[in-house]
Image 1 (spheres, helix red, strand yellow):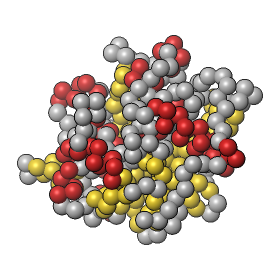
Image 2 (tube, helix red, strand yellow):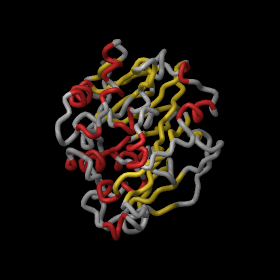
Image 3 (cartoon, helix red, strand yellow):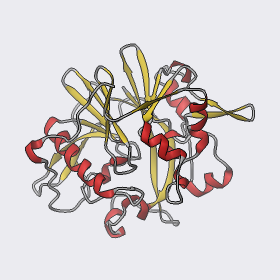
Image 4 (cartoon, one colour):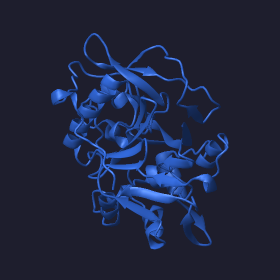
Length: 314
């Protein structure tokens, strides 16, 4: 497995941290003169059972100049180059899993071609929750700015989507868990191999700075769902030493969590060991601990220590 990047962009810091005061979040995520914070666009490449699986596709290249300026888009390196560094091309991808269909997660699903758009991954089947697709095509005044129809509607027109209904085992050891919160049908990806677990929470926990339970994005449509899902999944991740992979953190791409003496989550980051743009997830030493900015008293627990999510095969 590898983290592969599609560059970076910027969003409003207040929106990224919701009700958390700027004096707190700016300690870990300094803002620019337009109050924007820098965000990575990290996707996940999984190699399993003879297949190359890509989780999220980044920003893509179908952006008008005004949006490049608005979001300070810098696709360096672009996803295609990141994949090349691990000897994978777009045509080598067999499955694409979208955590949800916002523009920074599904923007690379399609590419401009002959005056229209075409699948970026010509051999791939695309997977998303059915409810997420339905909400995206019927976006309302609150949500439509986050969805760009050219990233997903053309794929349905040529029957490239496989829609999921709830938690699903896609392959042995590769499953999706519906978390809700950020969107009603947002899903995370769980990878299990030889007793170890890697977890890609998408926008449920977009950066390591969002580990504290109250640190919830203002973009989240259902923040109380985010809170409950974070509480349950972080508790399980802590107990079972999951490797967490952060989609938008420009500094810490992955790590394992523990609690400090004040019962707050801290991160043991896993360092970058490959060339710039990719990070291997296997065979890495345990690094020094990095504390995560947060509030005292974060005590993520569920009754019996169990996650509310269970995988099931379609």
